[in-house]
Image 1: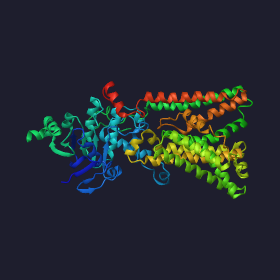
Image 2: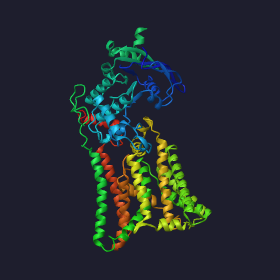
Image 3: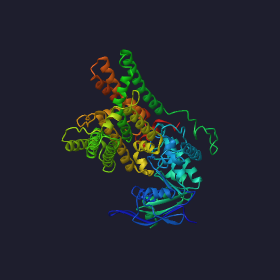
Image 4: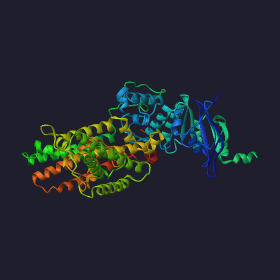
Length: 252
Length: 365
């Protein structure tokens, strides 16, 4: 079968610094793929390339087996790839519905729509569906997002990305700044997104979390993915060993 | 919401959307602030009316107040948009002058005192003012120079260009049509044409800001420009449009000022921008962006005008108006800052906040 998203031999260098040196990466639909690696391994560069923020110097990106070119974040979004950013990228003065449809507002039908008037009802219903879909903790659709708790805002950001992602959803260290209960809620959200049949990429530094949530774990080191484990068949030592390169030394 | 189903077998109480009557505290305070300002205006009006019932609460005085506020209110529409994007435009007075100078030049060039010449003059004023606005917007959005500096600089430059063109002497080029039909004209009895034009602009601006996609994008850009970029909103383009709108309203103000005073007002607009900014801020629009209303701005601009009219009528030195407005201005920004701190999240780093929460609260109850 073809992968929901596949990166082949991606190259990316900044001047003389080679950030990605022929990096391969695959995401299957309905699976959580964890992407781990030490600082400077090239995770962030890979994610920026796969979400269209940066362009690779070489290599190929395929969606469901078909080659694509992401020359802008919009191109990646149009292809069904969304990212939940660490800082959430929400507008604090807008409400949940407005954030949900930020940049994708539904115009009213006919002349009023052409004049810039929006269909609030459609957006409200769409947001309710999206939040209900994920069981997101959103207490009010009309309150400003800035007045909500961190957990609720995280829910909105995840629900927004999940609603628009038809193929792949990236989570860039989604739990780094959260408390224990909020972390659990986010992991639950990740599972629900996966159960919708979307390919989830989970980037994290927390190995126990990775082993808890992921179906597969791909390890990056020095600009390459050097290992692809089934989460059920690996353990903490093996992952840390692969990340730091200790494993190579043992094997050699 | 009628559907109160459980999701994935989990109780609805923690997950899902609760009743929407519960407004956030932020919104309640915000609603109160607009209300408070309106209350202050009503109280001021009531006091003056009680002190001078025969001269203050008259149709003549009301007409006077409306005419005096009309130009400021039009500028206030553009300024509200600009300040909601967390920007500022200090060049509106100079753009007003420049557009009226160019209108005069066009009128003199064409000759005649009829509607045709007047319309051409108006068109010229609107186009040049909008272009200056677009230049301001480009410098702010693309060249990334702070709005304060950009518009301070263009304010000086535009005024300078106006003075070069005219030699510093006001042009008396307003057509008779412009002066008689618009400047002194009444739509009906004591209802001035200036007031009606102003009202139309204010209402149109309010609809644009509060009801349309353009307005929503303005709030979004002021609230978190980076988030907007990430979801694909063309932030720079929008900022240029917002500053162009500011210029456009300054163009309307320029032609109306010409109609009102029958000549350009080269030396008379040095405090216009600050008056308008003060009115917008007193009206509850946040200097930090993301929040504000056209209604608040109109009320905020009416306060100094009503004070001035009232002080003159009851015989107080009208300079007191400046003192009162100054105090209101500082108080308004204090309230805005306090509101932001009370609401915590608004505009601060979300990451920082959720970290604070994670140590101060258990879960997201």
